[in-house]
View 1 (spheres, helix red, strand yellow):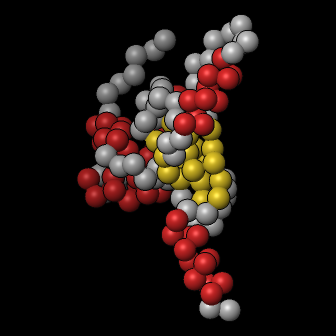
View 2 (cartoon, rainbow, N blue to C red):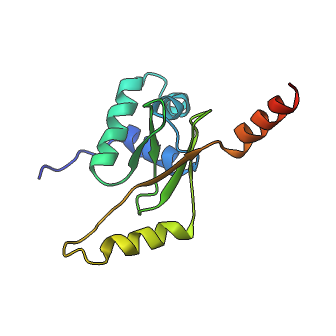
View 3 (cartoon, rainbow, N blue to C red):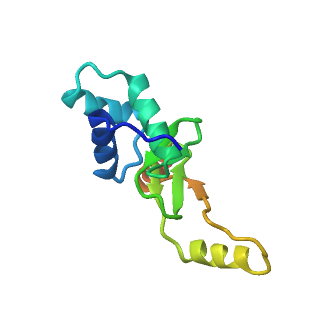
Length: 136
């Protein structure tokens, strides 16, 4: 395996990702990073985020529109994806651990990771839909 050269830009991208729990897109991270590195391109940010995913230092999540979002939390955990605004958020539920336990029961192999997604309307979009329905 080749040694990866240190990159200030990559480290800054990683720190920006770690500083948020909003599951940003590459474009979101780019908007923050370009303040520190004005000449950086969106492609460079995306390639570095992909490299962080390949290295196991970030996770890539996809919303209902097919847009990639990134998460600095790499341990297995569930996510909620809003079908209206496409926001991705962490979703803690006892179902998550129960599903992981059930998956391991009777499985001779080793499960090292999992992704659980729940879909629906986030609180803001559900409230907006309710307000809209009341107005009709």
